[in-house]
Image (cartoon, rainbow, N blue to C red; front, side, top):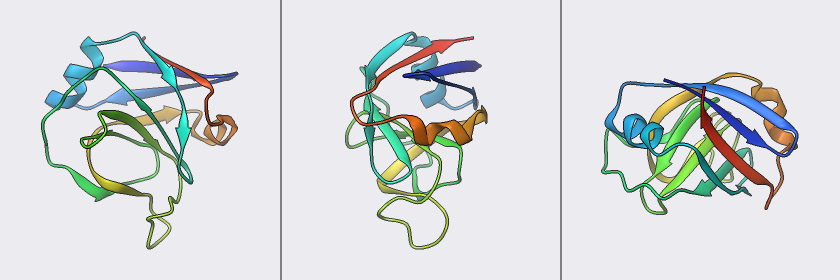
Length: 121
């Protein structure tokens, strides 16, 4: 399952894993929202309710996570305010459901309140 994420002039591609979270999000596409940033994390509300699925706080650069507490789609591309190392760390546990496959370096260009569109490829 491949997706495209567009924020302003930035376009990145990602591949979803075989989790139930990934399937639920993929089946809800296309989605549009407004970006929020938290360090080197972009997150936005989505109309999907997923259950806990191997959730964790420490993630890898490029990971896509579903934030259980806020029903949000999260894109991790560097350190966050909760990081204790060079790795991104979520504010609270997320279900990792995919990974950015191209364009990760462009994500810093997406700002708070930029329109975000997530589509199937």
